[in-house]
Length: 240
Image (cartoon, rainbow, N blue to C red; front, side, top):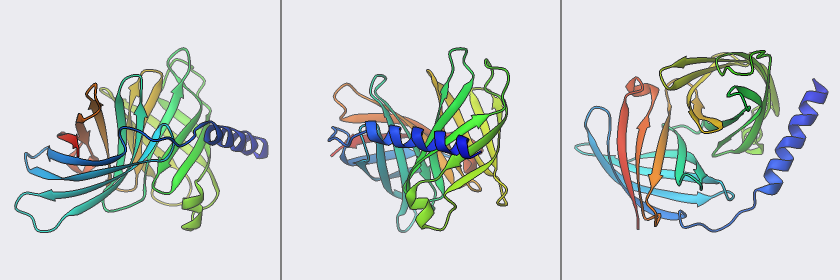
């Protein structure tokens, strides 16, 4: 186990070292217009702040029609420059969420390492125990290292347990059992050579997938959350 954690630490350190912060056309304020799965319209703003050249810290400030006050949603975005797409995870009135990315091997199955990001920082995870290298579904042994921000909030520095992956349509349902009570749940989609998704506690998390135009002045997205039984909402953001 010590060797396993040492490898994990090296992978995390290397990943953070090669990702350097840089300015981006995506940085700044965006106007938001959208509709939830029930047809209720909303509007507001979205602020994107770069963490490094791939990741962004996001903050939505949203007001629904016929409702008083606004709702704030903290989020994290992973930008795919080649596809001009951002995968954005968010928490619903909570910071207990994360955006996860797992690499797939050359046969299309999960391989040994992944990373996750929330408002608290970047963590990492290693998987073991899946013998069929062409399958994503199954049960994995996991060991991970949390971000400094999560540790500062009282979380343990490392963790271990199991991850169960189940496929339903194009969606993969994820459940982590880490021995600390209620399992962490999430869902993900296969995108190229990666499995990208969101995790959280209860149903207070969701995932948006933004497709930007060529000038990066506007993007459209679909989003979903367990709170709407995984039905899809839609959103458009326009750069201010």
